[in-house]
Length: 143
Image 1 (spheres, rainbow, N blue to C red):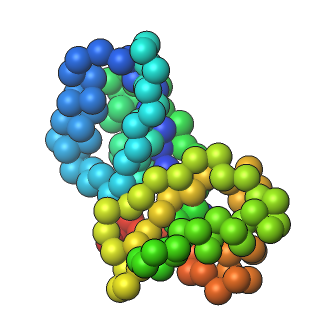
Image 2: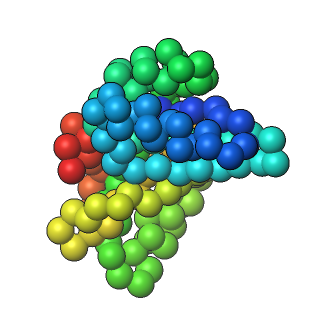
């Protein structure tokens, strides 16, 4: 049920993000979701893409530091309090959310949120046990 995310370490300077997106576009890699966290000197770009292996290969060839991380994609009820319900269920089981970001597509009446947990298997068990839908990677990559 886990989703593979690629993380790219980038210098915080003009043109680096444009270069990454061009490299991926030229290789036919489609970005499905992204998050960028930065400091004054560097950033970490987190991507969900349709072809992780190609993305990793072409970025490494261009000198970028790239790694893979397992994250979890969860359908979130698209209504006031929808995200709160998920976070409360995780809190009851003392599961820490390391980070999260939204996915731009919608699944029916739900939004999709990407989560990174400190205890992934426990988080998935808690989520599914509370009736939330955890998406498989293959479904997410093809959306």
